Image (cartoon, rainbow, N blue to C red; front, side):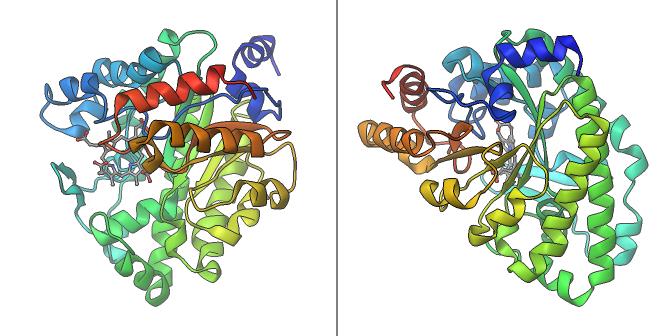
Length: 352
Ligand code: CP3
């Protein structure tokens, strides 16, 4: 542990929290805190041709990363990018169509997996690392910088399906019927994710979050192989390469499967909206494990007083635990800016 690192932890509440520190008022950031609900994001978004262009233009991606921090004063910035830049860097065609969500050229066969280009990933994602460097320079001293990637199963699910889906039937079917192809795809993604997150840490990311947004689409028997094992390997390798950078896991939708994710060596575990907070504080053993979450993003659509009441209940139930306040999933595009402002202000000032 070097001195510079110790100093940073002491001035950044979010980093201290991930080391097990408890605060009277939890540090706060929100998943998808940058994005379409912000008029200043929409202005920049409409100035570029495509969403990926925004992700790969360090000037603009830096600005968009900083916008919510500037406006609301969150305790962390999350790199502005997307989980689907990784398949894009592996050579897969990825497009973001207005109102339709992402579309990918499907990867469903052993031949298609063999054509992926893991050796090209770090070069192709160089603009993302440049954004990380710029944001790290520009942030206020008490604000932490979070890098992220999608977990291998979630990214594989988008690749196999060719886009978003409610239940990812093609991906779940491929995992059962062509396990060798699925293994090859998940291994390629796991290795690439380790390199990708490692390079974000090297560029200045202080925390790394792994989004397994569709972990809940798999039954527990399948989840061990496609979610838990890759997450464990990613956490282990990142701890070896960057022991000072904590990892937060977000296995959305796994319910009673959360305790298994609590045992993988990550510093933090993000709770989705379905997890009762008092259950989590009881069942997610190690009190040094930092819990993150888990206000329902719908609550931000109003009424504001009810939303603040729920936020305060979450804070109260987490008392005595290292806790980072967040939502249970991302901010919705229709969220009023005033609701986010009221939430962050209340968390910073309300009596606890
Ligand atoms: O502020 C932040 O959180 C940082 C940026 C960020 C984005 N996507 C920007 C984005 C992050 C962390 C993500 C993660 C992401 N992307 C996830 C995991 C979290 C989750 O929501 O479950 C997933 C599954 C994706 C894939 C993805 N990207 C989808 C399904 C979509 C379309 C839906 C939508 O919201 O439009 C995207 C596009 C996307 N990613 C946008 C933004 C701001 C909107 C695109 C636009 O502005 O045109």
